[in-house]
Length: 288
Ligand SMILES: [Ca+2]
Image 1: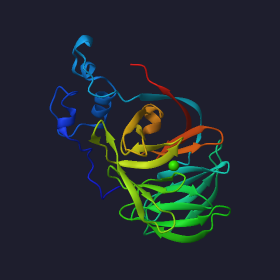
Image 2: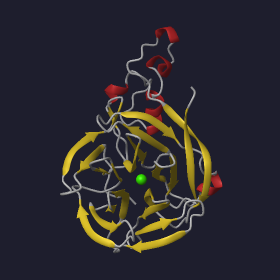
Image 3: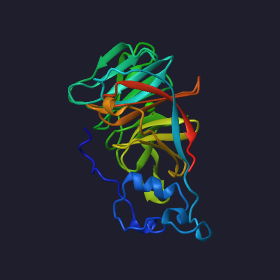
Image 4: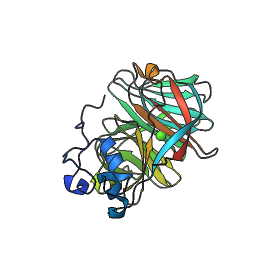
């Protein structure tokens, strides 16, 4: 569980006046999606002629399932990443955290590395010749990418939630709206961005994945992934993943979490905590 962070999305009401008919100091993510993916005129019910969009609508994406395969539903998924044809998964919870290596297609677990029980595993990424696994405290473990042997430790400032990387930096989320770019040599923060959606800070950013020049982030306790401009922090797309699991499959599961992009084959895989399946999906822009 994520117990350290306030559970609500916060936002400035001023920035939503143009698109909300009711005053709300804490819009749900669903409200934020509705208000930012339409023009101001559409959102307030005004006639098209009266529409004066203050900002360009943010694209909304939906998905098509390309294929799915079994996910061991005991895993409390905090991060997934492709690694030489396999998937690595970081599974959380105290006294149960582990690094798993999985065969895509079958879901078979072929390696499992337990980590000490006082750590709650979070994001995972493969960068240069190392595998980095972050934990909630900000401490992390480094593994040899060939044999998954533990070869060292690291730590970042603040809490650790999501982890990915670009060409030069580890990229870390901490449950707030801030994403930090961490130098892989000294693990110091070289720069950070504040993630905003039409100016409204978007917090609760969880698992991360760097995909074709953008950062994808699960928004904790929602069925949304946001696309983020890594230079400015602006949200450049909402991905609505509602309906991946059938209602009966959703029982006894936790939230959508975990994004893995396979650049070699241009495929995107998602799952969730204790979900029974991995999904390879293709994104499609939604028609309003
Ligand atoms: Ca990932």
